[in-house]
Amino acid sequence: MAIKVSHHLLLCATPNKASCCDPQIGAASWKRLKDLIKELRLESHARPEGIVLRSKVDCLRICEGGPILLVWPDGIWYKKVTPKRIETIIKKHIIKGKPLEKWILKTTPQAINLK
Image (tube, rainbow, N blue to C red; front, side, top):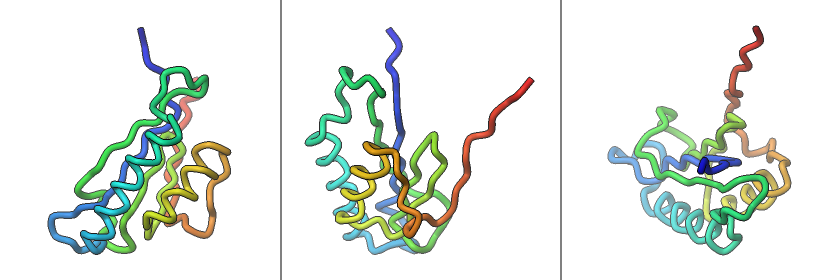
């Protein structure tokens, strides 16, 4: 049985070189992301939209303005993702489908192959 995934959230939160963000803020953002996904039952297989995956990554090659959150497949990169911002991003972007323009660092939408 295939699992439907609505979003995959990649958070650059605990960099080895600590050049993109304060490691304590990154760790707190990661903890909040994990807790919110559980609290809001976004990992539930019963969600018709699909589950929300999360991954903590060491580096997304931005190296400033972190923690950085990449929302896939939307290709939206959020900057300065504090624990408080995580909650707003999850509730507005992931659940309601409304990205928060003021916090977007860049976008890299998935290419569409038209044959």
